[in-house]
Length: 315
Ligand code: UDP
Ligand code: MG
Image (cartoon, rainbow, N blue to C red; front, top):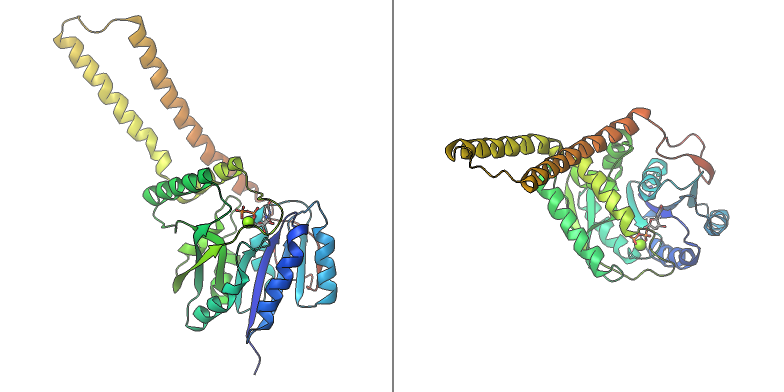
């Protein structure tokens, strides 16, 4: 009987220092399994020696597949490409820096064998993230879970596994240009479960996510999952209407003895304009997303591949 196959998708961006150790550790785990395996590395436009290392690995092991982008398209695009080019019955996405321990793979496969289609790995400890990153991350999850219909697991990571059945849905129906893949994974339905893991410290190199990048990412995610910010205009309108009404009534009852200072007027005007510009800004953000989606540029562009048919995948 043919063995089932697990595809491990790894996004790589300037990870030359981590790749050797990652490959050795992961391979050890994969070889100990009852499953056949493929390791799908997606080189996301690395500028260091990562591509050469990956080509070498692909040369010596035909189960190592390589998709290399024409430039840096971002971690999510890399994971999407990995999903596109994977052929396994289960696809596990993980980072190249060993923060997602490969020892979790047998546990994940056990869950898949039990019939689960989506497995979210939830971090119990994040050793390398600083205090600021941890606080901003909890704030972000609080906001998104309160203003959208979806529920996003706090501390869920880009470490997850999907069955080929669930992967098909992600491949064909979730090809937005502005997106939050981890959020989609948690909200496509199917039998889903969480597993916990302890994030290790990065094995080498440094994090590619700056606070600024994370901020943009969080704003985009909120805009992707919620239309609530668009309704703020209505609330603001009601608020300023009531405020105006209140001032009017007050003026009528005090018969002209209303506050008449220059400062009051200036403060009110500034406040109202600030609110208006803020709301226009929010609408602008949504229009920017519409524009990006409308242009329909590719999620990623492949430059070269190893151990893969050219026909596979889509961009
Ligand atoms: N990564 C990527 N493209 C990018 C940035 C990061 O493919 O533009 C990869 C990176 O090589 C790593 C994973 O995505 O394998 C997670 O990145 P990182 O470890 O820097 O993020 P952190 O773990 O600090 O959140
Ligand atoms: Mg990392």
